[in-house]
Image (cartoon, rainbow, N blue to C red):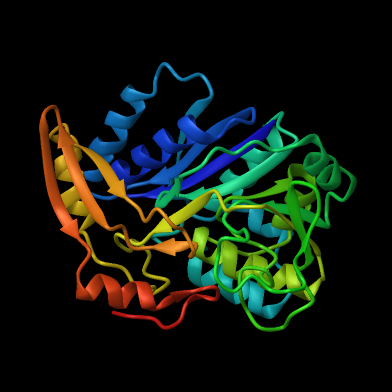
Length: 325
């Protein structure tokens, strides 16, 4: 079984859309844990989500809490750099919370053999059926193999060294030194790992949110040459949708549909509908159209324009080609 941990912050309506896509397309047995936090009026949006999914026994919500310090850092501080990170991001910091310890505890206490992360701007657009062969490869290589659902032969730029097997692709993450989806061995988006194999190293890393989890995690994994074996389906199954940005730790390009506006609409009974391109050749997309729906009302709030085309042009196999304010 796969433990699907979804990171979410102030994007209840987008999280709802992701959850609907998971329920529709993820055909492998799984449990879903939403690890979230909020500010301001966004708490009401998540309360609404909890009510909506109360009948789904495989979906649970866990809220991040502010703490004086997260004791899970004790196992992760190995250098002056780690200590500096801990002091800046967590120790007696009024914004410091228990994200690291909470995440590790969720994995530790789960009975799921495999784990993947997702962020609330993702969307599964095709059915996900994972074969026993894939699970066995990861099971037999718990610190050395993972299965990435957001890449496939449909994406532009798939390297020639990615080899087709039976119903999947396989590659070595350390073949190339240029940064892209097939050389980046750790991701917080739709990549399945062995739970115990990954947890062993999460405990040794310093991170305080999903952004630094991926950044610091990837650095650690590259340094220790872990998770060498990359696997993927033939066709990708998930895209990240660039509606907005909620993290202050990155300036990735988006079309800036404001989370506060979307939250007010969600509280008013609206849900989201995204029209994504029929041909998916990029793991990050600007939707062609964005609708808000309430009963018989279908409100168009975005249609692809010149700015959207510019944003899309800045998204490639390396992620964001440049950062934007």
